[in-house]
Image (tube, rainbow, N blue to C red; front, side):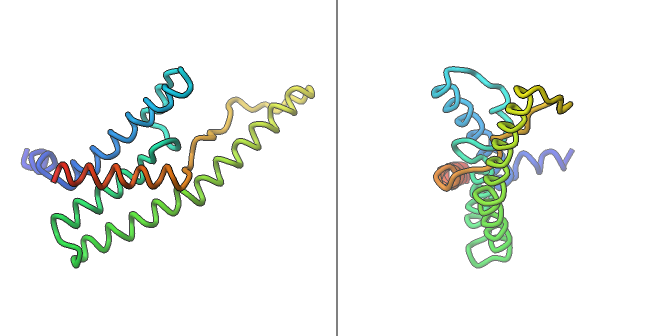
Length: 149
């Protein structure tokens, strides 16, 4: 029982999870606003505005800085982890999404040409983030941690 009490009292964990939840809800609402369609996958899926990955790791990093100080090894680990995650979201994952879009277009073209590709499902295109989406997620995460801590 002490384990669960420790979890719900861990402000660093609560900040991080809250950053993720708020970002996912905002992402879903923004998608709804622009497309006029509710897509439940947006509540848990990657990609989109704001970056929930950035919100999560920046909340983690900010809460760690508040709790342990900027000179602590805990903050150093959280800061480097945050930078790696955000770099990956802008770089590798965004490129993966672009490649998925091209491949999906090719599959559709080949299908219209009468080719049977035996592919059951489209590749996910919402994977990575633009720098603006990452920045907005980072600001959201920092603000979330400041409010909670």
